Image 1 (cartoon, rainbow, N blue to C red):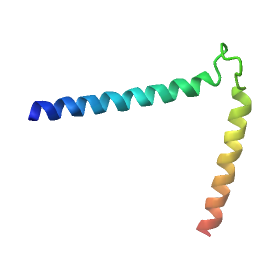
Image 2: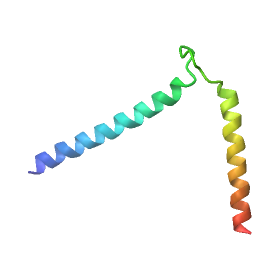
Image 3: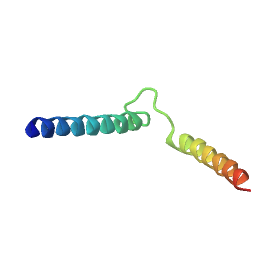
Image 4: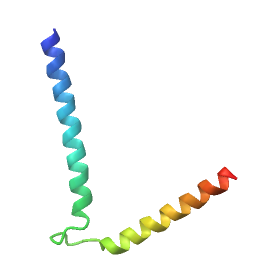
Length: 64
């Protein structure tokens, strides 16, 4: 019984690892030179930075 549980736990861990790696690969593909629809990493970073600053301002207002 314990061996079956260990096997199931290991399988769950491996599936979770695979999902995490796949997510990272998909994120990287967005900017990969071989991707025909490659996104500009500098532009995307600027958008995320602006979003981050907006969220920080909203948090600051809520803290007042």
